[in-house]
Amino acid sequence: MASEQSADHRFKKPLKQWIKAFFWCLIYILFIVWVDSYWWMLLLPLVFDGFITQYIPWTWWKKTKNKALLSFFSWVDAIGFALVAVYFINNFLFQNYQIPSSSLEKSLLVGDFLLVSKASYGPRIPNTPLSFPLVQHTFPLLNTKSYIEHPHWEYRRMKGFDTIKHNDIVVFNFPAGDTVAVNMPNPDYYWLCRYYGRDAVNSNKAQYGDIVYRPVDRRENFVKRCVGLPGDWLTIKDNQLYINGKAQEKFPGIQFNYFIQTDGTLIPEDVLSDLNISNEDLKNGFFDNSNENTKANIAYFGFDPAKPLYLLPLTEEAFSKVKQLPYVKSLKIEPSFMGGDVYPLGWVKHWNRDNFGPLWIPKKGAKLLLTSANLPIYERVIKNYENNKLEVKDGVIYINDQPAKTYTFKMDYYWMMGDNRHNSADSRSWGFVPEDHIVGRPVFVWLSLDKDKGLFNGKIRWNRFFKSAER
Image (tube, rainbow, N blue to C red; front, side, top):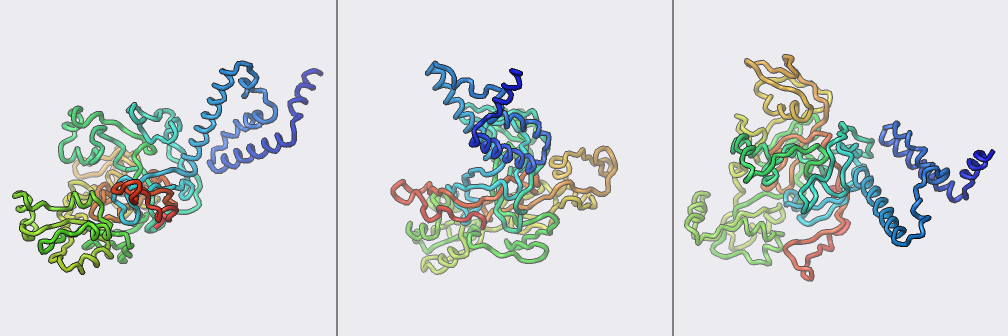
């Protein structure tokens, strides 16, 4: 009889408490439906217990008369709730991202802070669920991992509100960032191995540091424009991008590098500012012709060593302005050979940064006829991204120890490029972006800081606040 009265007492709660319980139970159930992992329903009684039955003494510390203990656990409770909230928001809804490099200028600028929607394309179930919020892979200062590798969950994506379309700006995990030389993360490990040898990179710890592996969701975040979708044919001819044979529009922010030689006049600072040339662009793009070696380089490119020479990124609008400057005597686009090697590294094809393809982008469920000619393009996809054993013996391709003439892809893939076309390490350098690497879509710029300006001299770019980051 006493136990029945005790049970009845536990259910005698104010209406306000029942409303709270119903609300949070409903939120929890809807989240489970979204995640599509119904075994989490086993924890629903705990949510109900927290509001109504309270068999578990969740707030036992509130009854203590020790003020110091009460204050301590109040802080622990608040911090714990905040960390859990941030964890779920960061993993499933939104994430902050700062533009660190100029690869998308002038569409997005260095110093732009973006709000990235993970719900747009569907948030991923974390590969490494036990991780510290707001830290990608390494704790600052401590230089230790911010995540625990086990348990490791396989790739699965929840339902999104949209799909990736041509020319969407997308945040994704760096595909070639699975293996990293800690002391030299850029260029990537595979580029280092290509040019210096795998044994040299792995053994020279003083120069390259530890060689570490990172799960997909712990690889560096990149942001680029998606120019190619699964199943597309992509070609670049003289810097013009073609998708399925159709020339693609050039956005106002797209820019290329140009050699600019004047009649002896140095380009004034106000003109450079009007052209949106950053201090870094100018530092890296001005040829000091007082140096004899630099003079030789200027002559090599076919310019007058006695006159000032610049190599600067220009949009179409900036290009038109430079053409009209009376002291500019020569204006030529940077030649393609200056772009270095392209994907796949070491392939015999004479592709380069400005002339690339034709190349087919893999699509989930599509079957590809494998040949010795196209295997270098898709080898990394088959081995690294789709986890197959691939070998070539006596001219025969083996996948998982079975002779294979075709391969059916398990995931969709995308082709990402920066708008700063001559200063962007993108898919032309490291290839396809698998669907399991997609993080989300930038929605808007919520803060923008110009690193070249002072706090009271234009540091804050007020005109970029809440600017759409989707184009």
